[in-house]
Length: 453
Image 1 (cartoon, rainbow, N blue to C red):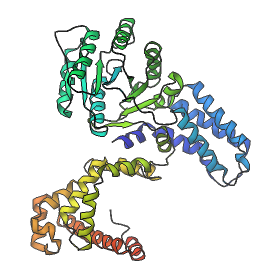
Image 2 (cartoon, helix red, strand yellow):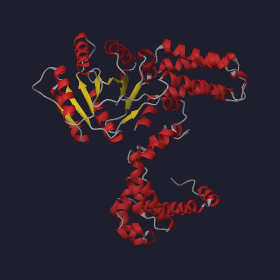
Image 3 (cartoon, one colour):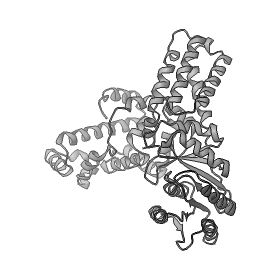
Image 4 (cartoon, one colour):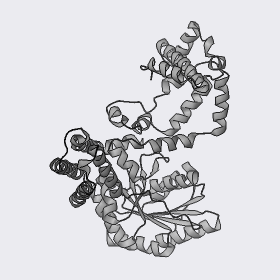
């Protein structure tokens, strides 16, 4: 549920920025005075979101300088240009471009660091799963938290769940030799990525820093990643600085973005440690990991949606061969409920419906107070699964008695069954028109379907 959670996380900030920029978005006269007043409100919104005051002040100073330098006040659409300047500065504040990880060596060793409770162990599994599925790598997880036996067991549970091997040795209490043994095991067994999960502490201490530093020297990782709980706000930034002073890590991972947080860490951390946020954790599931795109995050904060991510999610589920088969079925009027059910499964794999709607520009605020069930299609699926194979392939045979049986079997009302059949019929007509290029007719039909969900 990443995008809905991001919306929660930056809800207040988004609203306050929208109000601050409202004057400049209008068609009234824009002066240097109301630009200054607007940026003062922008700065206040950032500070309220737990962004460091100096960072917020520098941010608005840069926006003002660019606004006056680009002669925004005399432009034809000064409000839009100001919003673009704020968006560009937000993007730069969070790191500019998305940062990848170095996987050029074999094996590539990734060292995970961070405080206890930051989510290192869980995220180690998420990263292993991400590299296995997206990058077609063969990762190995190495358990180096010798202080909490449950941490080793947890990593094994995670590894089993995602089908990734875990190296551990409960007889060995030296995390440095464990890390080295894990890398040797990877080399001997064909693993091209090694993810080393290390111990954390409740607070930064010298013993912890010495230990992680010694592991770092022993295994010479390709990537050292600092995992931080975004819910700790500004403390996350301070902890990141303490670790970076010792490890000089390569990037940051923000976890628990699904919680109630003001988002200041995401906006501030790059400015303080001069290291990019590389990944974000967005939930409990192993698939709940995303590459951090500063530009897309800025779009989301300013209510501009995220169409690029929406398209990428759709492309991940797109099967060219299946699409060709579907096209033939539509052309021959053979598109049935089994095909419809398959399309629903593809949509569900893209993510939560509220998240997907939030990626559409302008929809984020409209969906803010709308409650959409996590399984928005469950009634539709129940109705379809209560049909016989003949009914799914030939919906036109479904009469009153069949509707009663389907309704009873799916635990839904006859009205819901009727509604689904009506919508399916309308969708079939629309698909045929798209196939035949009947654009004008399709637009007329869509106008008559405004109430259809």
